[in-house]
Image (cartoon, rainbow, N blue to C red; front, side, top):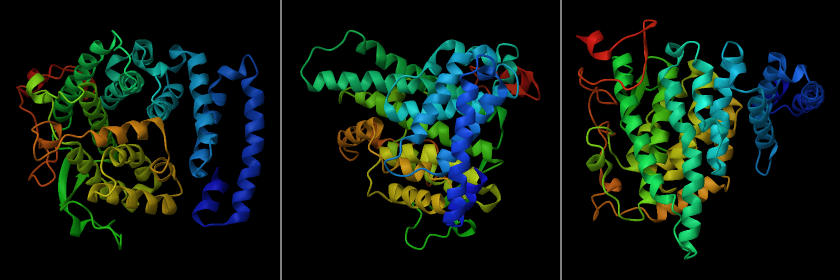
Length: 408
Protein backbone atom coordinates (compact mmCIF):
# COMPACT_ATOMS: atom_id res chain seq x y z
CA UNK A 1 0.00 0.00 0.00
CA UNK A 2 2.88 2.37 0.81
CA UNK A 3 4.50 1.65 -2.53
CA UNK A 4 1.24 2.24 -4.39
CA UNK A 5 0.65 5.53 -2.56
CA UNK A 6 4.21 6.79 -3.13
CA UNK A 7 4.13 5.74 -6.77
CA UNK A 8 0.83 7.54 -7.43
CA UNK A 9 1.83 10.76 -5.66
CA UNK A 10 5.20 10.95 -7.41
CA UNK A 11 4.09 9.40 -10.72
CA UNK A 12 6.76 6.71 -10.31
CA UNK A 13 5.75 3.75 -12.49
CA UNK A 14 8.34 1.26 -11.20
CA UNK A 15 7.37 1.72 -7.54
CA UNK A 16 3.70 1.50 -8.47
CA UNK A 17 4.34 -1.82 -10.22
CA UNK A 18 6.15 -3.12 -7.15
CA UNK A 19 3.11 -2.19 -5.09
CA UNK A 20 0.91 -4.13 -7.50
CA UNK A 21 3.06 -7.25 -7.07
CA UNK A 22 3.04 -7.03 -3.28
CA UNK A 23 -0.70 -6.42 -3.31
CA UNK A 24 -1.21 -9.61 -5.32
CA UNK A 25 0.82 -11.58 -2.77
CA UNK A 26 -1.16 -10.03 0.10
CA UNK A 27 -4.43 -11.02 -1.59
CA UNK A 28 -3.27 -14.64 -1.87
CA UNK A 29 -2.39 -14.71 1.83
CA UNK A 30 -5.72 -13.13 2.72
CA UNK A 31 -7.63 -15.63 0.59
CA UNK A 32 -5.92 -18.47 2.44
CA UNK A 33 -6.78 -16.99 5.84
CA UNK A 34 -10.41 -16.37 4.86
CA UNK A 35 -10.80 -20.05 3.96
CA UNK A 36 -9.55 -21.12 7.41
CA UNK A 37 -12.39 -21.86 9.85
CA UNK A 38 -10.60 -20.11 12.74
CA UNK A 39 -8.44 -17.44 11.10
CA UNK A 40 -11.38 -16.11 9.09
CA UNK A 41 -12.89 -14.66 12.28
CA UNK A 42 -9.74 -13.16 13.77
CA UNK A 43 -8.98 -9.47 14.09
CA UNK A 44 -5.82 -9.94 12.02
CA UNK A 45 -7.82 -11.13 9.02
CA UNK A 46 -10.42 -8.39 9.46
CA UNK A 47 -7.67 -5.78 9.77
CA UNK A 48 -5.83 -7.03 6.69
CA UNK A 49 -9.04 -6.91 4.66
CA UNK A 50 -9.65 -3.30 5.72
CA UNK A 51 -6.04 -2.30 5.04
CA UNK A 52 -6.10 -3.66 1.51
CA UNK A 53 -9.19 -1.60 0.62
CA UNK A 54 -6.94 1.46 0.88
CA UNK A 55 -4.90 0.06 -2.02
CA UNK A 56 -8.05 -0.02 -4.14
CA UNK A 57 -8.84 3.56 -3.17
CA UNK A 58 -5.38 4.64 -4.32
CA UNK A 59 -5.63 2.79 -7.63
CA UNK A 60 -9.18 3.62 -8.67
CA UNK A 61 -9.66 4.21 -12.37
CA UNK A 62 -12.55 4.38 -14.78
CA UNK A 63 -13.98 0.98 -15.60
CA UNK A 64 -12.35 -0.73 -12.63
CA UNK A 65 -14.59 -2.88 -10.42
CA UNK A 66 -11.91 -4.09 -8.00
CA UNK A 67 -12.82 -1.54 -5.32
CA UNK A 68 -16.51 -2.50 -5.45
CA UNK A 69 -15.64 -6.20 -5.34
CA UNK A 70 -13.32 -5.75 -2.37
CA UNK A 71 -15.82 -3.61 -0.47
CA UNK A 72 -18.51 -6.22 -1.10
CA UNK A 73 -16.19 -8.85 0.35
CA UNK A 74 -15.70 -6.71 3.47
CA UNK A 75 -19.47 -6.54 3.85
CA UNK A 76 -19.79 -10.31 3.60
CA UNK A 77 -17.00 -10.81 6.17
CA UNK A 78 -18.61 -8.40 8.65
CA UNK A 79 -22.02 -10.01 8.14
CA UNK A 80 -20.66 -13.52 8.73
CA UNK A 81 -18.79 -12.36 11.85
CA UNK A 82 -22.02 -10.92 13.24
CA UNK A 83 -22.53 -7.74 15.31
CA UNK A 84 -21.40 -9.42 18.54
CA UNK A 85 -17.79 -9.59 17.33
CA UNK A 86 -17.69 -5.81 16.89
CA UNK A 87 -18.50 -4.74 20.45
CA UNK A 88 -14.95 -4.03 21.65
CA UNK A 89 -11.86 -2.35 20.28
CA UNK A 90 -10.00 -2.74 17.98
CA UNK A 91 -12.65 -4.72 16.08
CA UNK A 92 -15.27 -2.07 16.79
CA UNK A 93 -13.06 0.69 15.41
CA UNK A 94 -12.65 -1.17 12.12
CA UNK A 95 -16.39 -1.82 12.01
CA UNK A 96 -17.11 1.90 12.36
CA UNK A 97 -14.71 2.67 9.50
CA UNK A 98 -16.20 -0.05 7.30
CA UNK A 99 -19.79 1.00 8.02
CA UNK A 100 -19.52 4.25 6.05
CA UNK A 101 -17.77 2.50 3.13
CA UNK A 102 -20.47 -0.16 2.91
CA UNK A 103 -23.30 2.37 3.12
CA UNK A 104 -21.66 4.46 0.40
CA UNK A 105 -21.49 1.41 -1.89
CA UNK A 106 -25.13 0.60 -1.18
CA UNK A 107 -26.12 4.21 -1.90
CA UNK A 108 -24.54 4.24 -5.35
CA UNK A 109 -26.11 0.88 -6.16
CA UNK A 110 -29.52 1.93 -4.71
CA UNK A 111 -29.58 -1.42 -2.91
CA UNK A 112 -30.47 -2.10 0.67
CA UNK A 113 -27.69 -3.00 3.11
CA UNK A 114 -27.88 -5.26 6.15
CA UNK A 115 -26.55 -2.31 8.16
CA UNK A 116 -30.06 -0.85 8.38
CA UNK A 117 -31.10 -3.76 10.62
CA UNK A 118 -31.56 -2.73 14.28
CA UNK A 119 -29.03 -5.27 15.59
CA UNK A 120 -26.23 -3.67 13.56
CA UNK A 121 -27.14 -0.27 15.01
CA UNK A 122 -27.53 -1.48 18.60
CA UNK A 123 -25.46 -4.56 19.44
CA UNK A 124 -21.95 -3.05 18.93
CA UNK A 125 -22.82 -0.45 21.62
CA UNK A 126 -25.04 -2.49 23.94
CA UNK A 127 -22.31 -2.89 26.59
CA UNK A 128 -21.84 0.88 26.77
CA UNK A 129 -24.65 2.87 25.16
CA UNK A 130 -23.07 6.16 26.26
CA UNK A 131 -20.08 5.36 24.05
CA UNK A 132 -22.22 5.78 20.94
CA UNK A 133 -21.26 9.11 19.44
CA UNK A 134 -23.33 11.77 17.76
CA UNK A 135 -21.76 10.80 14.46
CA UNK A 136 -22.78 7.16 14.83
CA UNK A 137 -26.42 8.14 15.39
CA UNK A 138 -26.15 10.18 12.22
CA UNK A 139 -24.74 7.16 10.37
CA UNK A 140 -27.73 5.14 11.66
CA UNK A 141 -29.99 7.49 9.68
CA UNK A 142 -27.61 7.39 6.72
CA UNK A 143 -27.79 3.57 6.72
CA UNK A 144 -31.54 3.65 6.05
CA UNK A 145 -31.25 5.66 2.83
CA UNK A 146 -30.16 2.78 0.52
CA UNK A 147 -33.42 0.99 1.41
CA UNK A 148 -35.44 4.11 0.60
CA UNK A 149 -33.59 4.49 -2.69
CA UNK A 150 -34.18 0.86 -3.59
CA UNK A 151 -37.90 1.23 -2.92
CA UNK A 152 -38.21 4.67 -4.53
CA UNK A 153 -36.45 3.69 -7.75
CA UNK A 154 -38.65 0.59 -8.02
CA UNK A 155 -41.74 2.72 -7.44
CA UNK A 156 -40.64 5.08 -10.20
CA UNK A 157 -40.13 2.19 -12.63
CA UNK A 158 -43.63 0.90 -11.92
CA UNK A 159 -45.16 4.35 -12.27
CA UNK A 160 -43.36 5.12 -15.52
CA UNK A 161 -44.48 1.77 -16.91
CA UNK A 162 -48.10 2.54 -16.04
CA UNK A 163 -48.34 -0.37 -13.63
CA UNK A 164 -50.40 -0.20 -10.43
CA UNK A 165 -48.85 1.40 -7.39
CA UNK A 166 -47.52 -1.03 -4.78
CA UNK A 167 -49.36 -1.00 -1.44
CA UNK A 168 -46.08 -0.38 0.39
CA UNK A 169 -45.37 2.95 -1.29
CA UNK A 170 -47.71 4.96 0.93
CA UNK A 171 -45.69 3.81 3.96
CA UNK A 172 -42.38 4.99 2.50
CA UNK A 173 -42.99 8.75 2.65
CA UNK A 174 -43.78 8.78 6.41
CA UNK A 175 -40.55 6.86 7.02
CA UNK A 176 -38.56 9.47 5.08
CA UNK A 177 -40.26 12.24 7.07
CA UNK A 178 -39.40 10.42 10.30
CA UNK A 179 -35.71 10.39 9.31
CA UNK A 180 -35.93 14.12 8.58
CA UNK A 181 -37.34 14.59 12.06
CA UNK A 182 -34.44 12.58 13.47
CA UNK A 183 -32.00 14.82 11.61
CA UNK A 184 -33.61 17.84 13.22
CA UNK A 185 -33.12 16.31 16.65
CA UNK A 186 -29.51 15.49 15.86
CA UNK A 187 -28.91 19.07 14.74
CA UNK A 188 -30.22 20.29 18.11
CA UNK A 189 -28.15 17.84 20.10
CA UNK A 190 -25.04 18.78 18.11
CA UNK A 191 -25.25 22.30 19.47
CA UNK A 192 -26.03 21.06 22.97
CA UNK A 193 -22.91 18.90 22.93
CA UNK A 194 -20.62 21.33 21.07
CA UNK A 195 -21.45 24.93 21.95
CA UNK A 196 -19.40 26.59 19.17
CA UNK A 197 -18.25 23.95 16.68
CA UNK A 198 -18.04 26.29 13.66
CA UNK A 199 -17.09 29.81 12.64
CA UNK A 200 -16.72 31.64 9.35
CA UNK A 201 -13.50 32.78 7.67
CA UNK A 202 -13.38 35.16 4.65
CA UNK A 203 -12.04 33.23 1.68
CA UNK A 204 -9.19 35.71 1.24
CA UNK A 205 -7.79 34.40 4.53
CA UNK A 206 -8.24 30.74 3.65
CA UNK A 207 -4.72 29.51 2.96
CA UNK A 208 -5.70 26.43 0.94
CA UNK A 209 -7.37 28.25 -1.97
CA UNK A 210 -5.14 27.70 -4.98
CA UNK A 211 -7.43 27.19 -7.96
CA UNK A 212 -6.50 29.31 -10.95
CA UNK A 213 -9.63 28.70 -12.99
CA UNK A 214 -12.63 28.12 -10.69
CA UNK A 215 -13.70 30.76 -8.22
CA UNK A 216 -15.39 29.59 -4.99
CA UNK A 217 -19.18 30.10 -4.97
CA UNK A 218 -19.12 31.60 -1.47
CA UNK A 219 -17.71 34.61 0.35
CA UNK A 220 -16.86 32.84 3.61
CA UNK A 221 -15.54 29.38 4.37
CA UNK A 222 -16.73 27.38 7.35
CA UNK A 223 -14.00 26.37 9.79
CA UNK A 224 -14.35 23.88 12.64
CA UNK A 225 -12.86 23.11 16.03
CA UNK A 226 -11.53 19.85 14.57
CA UNK A 227 -11.77 17.74 11.45
CA UNK A 228 -14.29 15.31 12.91
CA UNK A 229 -16.81 18.13 13.47
CA UNK A 230 -16.37 18.98 9.78
CA UNK A 231 -17.06 15.33 8.89
CA UNK A 232 -20.27 15.35 10.92
CA UNK A 233 -21.35 18.62 9.32
CA UNK A 234 -20.77 17.32 5.78
CA UNK A 235 -22.44 13.94 6.33
CA UNK A 236 -25.38 15.75 7.93
CA UNK A 237 -25.78 17.89 4.81
CA UNK A 238 -25.34 14.95 2.43
CA UNK A 239 -27.98 12.98 4.35
CA UNK A 240 -30.29 16.01 4.24
CA UNK A 241 -29.87 16.30 0.47
CA UNK A 242 -30.76 12.65 -0.11
CA UNK A 243 -33.75 12.65 2.24
CA UNK A 244 -35.15 15.88 0.80
CA UNK A 245 -34.77 14.51 -2.73
CA UNK A 246 -36.52 11.31 -1.66
CA UNK A 247 -39.33 13.31 -0.07
CA UNK A 248 -39.76 15.36 -3.22
CA UNK A 249 -39.53 12.33 -5.51
CA UNK A 250 -42.03 10.24 -3.55
CA UNK A 251 -44.50 13.13 -3.43
CA UNK A 252 -44.72 13.07 -7.24
CA UNK A 253 -44.90 16.85 -7.59
CA UNK A 254 -47.43 17.38 -4.79
CA UNK A 255 -44.77 18.66 -2.42
CA UNK A 256 -45.85 20.19 0.85
CA UNK A 257 -42.95 22.05 2.51
CA UNK A 258 -41.29 19.89 5.16
CA UNK A 259 -41.48 22.85 7.55
CA UNK A 260 -45.30 22.67 7.34
CA UNK A 261 -45.28 18.98 8.24
CA UNK A 262 -42.48 19.05 10.81
CA UNK A 263 -42.52 22.63 12.13
CA UNK A 264 -39.28 23.59 13.81
CA UNK A 265 -37.84 20.10 13.35
CA UNK A 266 -35.73 20.58 10.27
CA UNK A 267 -33.98 23.66 8.85
CA UNK A 268 -35.41 23.74 5.34
CA UNK A 269 -33.43 24.85 2.36
CA UNK A 270 -33.01 24.24 -1.32
CA UNK A 271 -30.78 21.42 -2.46
CA UNK A 272 -28.52 24.07 -3.97
CA UNK A 273 -28.07 25.77 -0.58
CA UNK A 274 -27.29 22.48 1.15
CA UNK A 275 -24.70 21.70 -1.53
CA UNK A 276 -23.33 25.21 -1.03
CA UNK A 277 -22.72 24.50 2.64
CA UNK A 278 -20.63 21.46 1.72
CA UNK A 279 -18.70 23.71 -0.69
CA UNK A 280 -17.92 26.05 2.18
CA UNK A 281 -16.19 23.19 4.07
CA UNK A 282 -13.70 22.44 1.31
CA UNK A 283 -11.15 25.05 2.38
CA UNK A 284 -10.94 23.69 5.92
CA UNK A 285 -10.86 20.01 4.98
CA UNK A 286 -8.20 20.55 2.32
CA UNK A 287 -5.84 22.45 4.60
CA UNK A 288 -2.32 21.04 4.41
CA UNK A 289 -2.36 20.23 8.14
CA UNK A 290 -5.05 17.60 7.52
CA UNK A 291 -3.07 15.78 4.87
CA UNK A 292 -4.91 13.18 2.81
CA UNK A 293 -7.44 12.45 5.56
CA UNK A 294 -9.25 15.76 5.14
CA UNK A 295 -9.83 15.06 1.46
CA UNK A 296 -10.92 11.48 2.21
CA UNK A 297 -13.56 12.87 4.59
CA UNK A 298 -14.78 15.31 1.93
CA UNK A 299 -15.16 12.89 -0.99
CA UNK A 300 -18.49 11.21 -0.21
CA UNK A 301 -20.52 14.31 0.77
CA UNK A 302 -18.94 16.31 -2.08
CA UNK A 303 -19.94 13.63 -4.59
CA UNK A 304 -23.52 13.48 -3.30
CA UNK A 305 -23.80 17.28 -3.45
CA UNK A 306 -22.31 17.35 -6.96
CA UNK A 307 -24.75 14.72 -8.28
CA UNK A 308 -27.74 16.54 -6.78
CA UNK A 309 -27.31 19.87 -8.55
CA UNK A 310 -26.96 21.29 -12.05
CA UNK A 311 -23.50 20.37 -13.37
CA UNK A 312 -23.06 23.90 -14.73
CA UNK A 313 -23.84 25.58 -11.41
CA UNK A 314 -21.02 27.37 -9.54
CA UNK A 315 -21.32 24.87 -6.67
CA UNK A 316 -20.98 21.83 -8.96
CA UNK A 317 -18.06 23.32 -10.87
CA UNK A 318 -16.30 24.12 -7.60
CA UNK A 319 -16.79 20.65 -6.08
CA UNK A 320 -15.65 18.95 -9.28
CA UNK A 321 -12.54 21.12 -9.46
CA UNK A 322 -11.64 20.53 -5.80
CA UNK A 323 -12.00 16.75 -6.10
CA UNK A 324 -10.00 16.60 -9.34
CA UNK A 325 -7.14 18.68 -7.95
CA UNK A 326 -6.87 16.89 -4.63
CA UNK A 327 -7.25 13.42 -6.12
CA UNK A 328 -3.97 14.12 -7.90
CA UNK A 329 -2.18 15.71 -4.96
CA UNK A 330 -3.47 13.55 -2.09
CA UNK A 331 -3.25 10.17 -3.81
CA UNK A 332 -6.86 9.06 -3.26
CA UNK A 333 -9.28 9.30 -6.17
CA UNK A 334 -12.62 8.00 -4.87
CA UNK A 335 -14.51 11.29 -5.26
CA UNK A 336 -12.78 12.03 -8.55
CA UNK A 337 -13.78 8.53 -9.70
CA UNK A 338 -17.38 8.51 -8.40
CA UNK A 339 -18.36 11.88 -9.89
CA UNK A 340 -17.79 10.57 -13.42
CA UNK A 341 -19.43 7.15 -13.04
CA UNK A 342 -22.91 6.26 -14.27
CA UNK A 343 -24.56 4.50 -11.33
CA UNK A 344 -28.15 3.85 -10.24
CA UNK A 345 -27.75 6.72 -7.76
CA UNK A 346 -26.43 9.19 -10.35
CA UNK A 347 -29.27 8.25 -12.72
CA UNK A 348 -31.92 8.69 -10.02
CA UNK A 349 -30.47 12.02 -8.91
CA UNK A 350 -30.40 13.19 -12.54
CA UNK A 351 -34.09 12.36 -12.84
CA UNK A 352 -34.74 14.30 -9.63
CA UNK A 353 -32.91 17.32 -11.08
CA UNK A 354 -35.09 17.14 -14.16
CA UNK A 355 -38.21 17.27 -11.98
CA UNK A 356 -37.01 20.04 -9.63
CA UNK A 357 -39.70 22.66 -8.96
CA UNK A 358 -39.12 26.11 -10.45
CA UNK A 359 -37.67 28.17 -7.61
CA UNK A 360 -39.15 31.38 -9.00
CA UNK A 361 -42.71 30.12 -9.38
CA UNK A 362 -43.02 27.52 -6.65
CA UNK A 363 -42.70 27.87 -2.91
CA UNK A 364 -41.58 24.31 -2.39
CA UNK A 365 -38.19 22.83 -1.57
CA UNK A 366 -36.28 24.62 -4.30
CA UNK A 367 -37.33 28.05 -3.04
CA UNK A 368 -36.61 27.72 0.65
CA UNK A 369 -33.67 29.36 2.37
CA UNK A 370 -31.97 27.29 5.07
CA UNK A 371 -31.32 28.68 8.54
CA UNK A 372 -27.58 28.45 7.84
CA UNK A 373 -27.78 30.17 4.43
CA UNK A 374 -24.58 30.77 2.51
CA UNK A 375 -24.40 34.50 3.16
CA UNK A 376 -25.74 34.49 6.71
CA UNK A 377 -23.71 36.04 9.49
CA UNK A 378 -22.57 34.24 12.62
CA UNK A 379 -22.42 30.48 13.01
CA UNK A 380 -22.89 28.30 9.95
CA UNK A 381 -25.59 26.38 11.81
CA UNK A 382 -27.96 28.37 13.94
CA UNK A 383 -27.66 27.47 17.60
CA UNK A 384 -30.86 26.03 19.00
CA UNK A 385 -32.64 27.22 22.09
CA UNK A 386 -31.27 26.05 25.43
CA UNK A 387 -34.72 24.56 26.04
CA UNK A 388 -34.26 22.11 23.14
CA UNK A 389 -34.24 18.50 24.31
CA UNK A 390 -31.92 16.03 22.61
CA UNK A 391 -33.88 12.98 21.52
CA UNK A 392 -30.87 10.69 21.69
CA UNK A 393 -28.52 9.86 24.57
CA UNK A 394 -25.30 11.79 24.12
CA UNK A 395 -22.06 11.74 26.08
CA UNK A 396 -21.18 14.88 27.98
CA UNK A 397 -17.87 14.68 29.85
CA UNK A 398 -18.27 10.93 29.95
CA UNK A 399 -21.77 10.79 31.39
CA UNK A 400 -25.34 10.99 30.15
CA UNK A 401 -27.21 14.07 31.27
CA UNK A 402 -30.58 15.64 30.66
CA UNK A 403 -29.77 18.51 28.27
CA UNK A 404 -32.16 20.88 30.06
CA UNK A 405 -30.76 20.11 33.49
CA UNK A 406 -27.17 20.34 32.32
CA UNK A 407 -27.75 23.80 30.84
CA UNK A 408 -29.88 25.23 33.64
